[in-house]
Image (cartoon, rainbow over all chains, first blue to last red; front, side, top):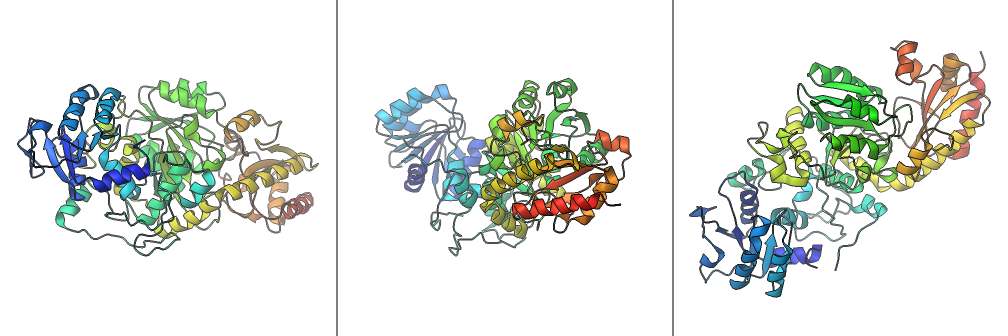
Length: 159
Length: 429
């Protein structure tokens, strides 16, 4: 179970570096929205896309394996068609990332199993930006039902 | 540990409202501000581009209003909500987000009079045509659908006819045509009926009524289920770059809360019917006790309905909670906890007796609202519908002898006492 509130919040707090596979440089694309949001909230974004040299001020790499070895990637965030994801799961394990995150609409149980067997935590069919906004604060400002119920002062808020 | 599924009463008290981050305040703070500072020009740009969540201007968003939005969305079992300045504004914002000039709406004819006028007068002036149909046979909605139809609209419980809609049958007709079903759930409240569970796609409310329950503030809400497939080809405004918000594709970018975000950033932002944060605070207070109040509204209304049903000076009673009411079976399916807080009845002696009844009541308040904690009465033929002739009144479901009563939370025996003495005086000439 990695999709309950406590686990997702821990993942979002522990993660510092996110490799975004399939990140677009077009500002209106959801991948750009999500990556810019995460960068604005203190995460280092490592773009992975063979079509670009640089996105969001960061060098862009053609594949996960091309990311320099001295960059410690915590999370690999996948904006790709579901059927493309099993090889990416192998690559995510190979570069020693800790979390394999498949975006909203990206669903592949085989890829999830590969990542889990490699010792990774897996989140599937969720947007990293929306989950961050939901659990760390912000999404509620847009009237979205967050499912967060608590009588503790929300010291996790980031906005 | 798996997240707990909290109950309705817990959500009424907690959903959308954590202790205040800055002060620890447990009650909802009233953020009485128009605007919010930007950390930098880049932060401002991200906010305007909707690339980050945050506040810009209280015409579109406000933290107090957001608490009410999230609470209402949660209670309806929806994905996201938007609060606006009135129930009428809620319908307008929901429907003008969906329809434009040349588009058509298919609506139940049994509507609150103000809603009927909004569709029949104001929307027609904008080139949006509404086909009104008798909702008792769901097939009437199907027959009125054309390629230009963009939504179907109806009330959970019609006002003032007290007819109950077969929501799931109408939802199926809407979905077969690729359009959303918009339900006004004001008379249902999410405690008695959750239209999304029966296939509705958008719910609107006049939160002025039982949601607030205090009769102190005017407000409305739009809630989306998050399940409608906006990319079915009929809603380019949801899938194509927005002309109203510099090129954003609302469905692609915001997914299951894309409709509410479009309603907020295009329709509410440009038309401007915002809710005051102070009103939002009062509605949050109201929601805390919604389940308790609705239980009592329903038991009191049923008791009054039975009392009137047995009364020699009353010719008829319309309340779906009565077993012989034609809508009783639908009420049992859609409103199992109670058929709501409004009934209508016919008084012997027609219009003159109706006027005398209203004027003889001691504490039943004569006014044009429903859903207050106090019992409210009105004689539609001499007030809300007096500009219509008798034939027009009949087609609107209003007869000269009709009294509408929104049964409140006073001591039941006192309510029955006031009805009894006013009925007796209604027969004096």
